[in-house]
Length: 173
Image 1: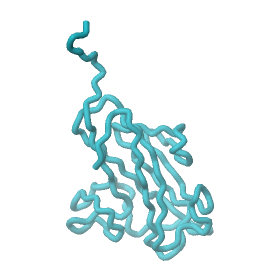
Image 2: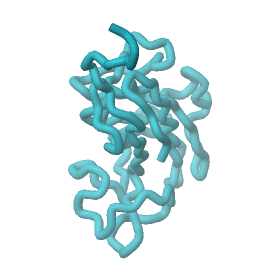
Image 3: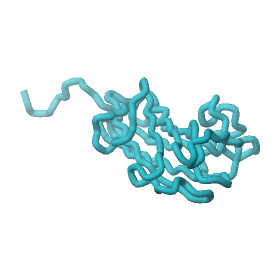
């Protein structure tokens, strides 16, 4: 976990890995922006992301924004970044956990595909035996020390209080 302060921009790199046996395209990602962060779709760093309520969505489309024109081949990965701003005020020592999920994908012909090992009805940790973040891609969260494949979380720790009260400076009236 990295430490941050209120007002900081935090970049989260979301890596999508194709565990299937066909090329994936039109891969929909949702970032479940937690309370304590703000997503700003006017930030140039968030080009391609769309605000949906408090969350953000992004679709990886073949040949667009650096995504391979041939889609995401089996056993290949692609990383997309999202920038979130730490809200003020925040309590020092508090942690903020960001989670992103893949919610849908098609093959290159646009035919929707079913992701066999993902459960989109729950967020990371819900229904899992352990709430781990190990970045393993071949687990389903049903065994001890495993997490679900469709997402992993990242946490940041607030470094200081964001105190909006006037500060007394010794020797100054």
